[in-house]
Length: 247
Image (cartoon, rainbow, N blue to C red):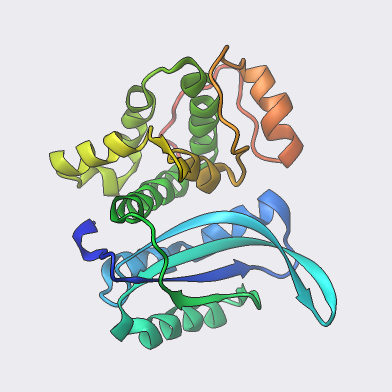
């Protein structure tokens, strides 16, 4: 992945993508799975400099009534000269695959995010999509245990996550030493933009409480009961360990 292609002069555009008849976390997972060929395509073409993905629930007025869309939000960085071609390419994919672009798409516009943040989000997304594609249930367990066991105790995110990234993410495997150093420098960052690691939790699990705190780690039972079960996400088995077999 060439993060240098992402420039602070790029515009930020968004598609809110959903699929008729599917809702909630399960629907989000299904949409992400169906979008994987598009994500693979966007990584290798020139019109879009980079992109990131997350789940979002938004209310929007349609015909005078507010409707809630449970969407996969595809945010993309695009040079001014490539806007029309980039939008057309994404819309063609959605039309061909019967995926729905909700009516509140954001057209490309200037947004004053730091360049490091833009590049981190793009790299984070590529790694997250890789591990979801190989074994999504294992990825959910990995990020849930990071969120409620590793982060609260100030333990090393790299020690917890990197073995899976090294095994399951082609993006991570291909990073230079400098690229990996960039990623781990910014992954634990907390600033006015929030907790940067929050993005990967949201991407993989489809939900995260933005309130992060330190303290006692959660047991697997508590993670399942208080976090995963209420949102109908895959539960973690008591003997969970990182796996390689896709399911």
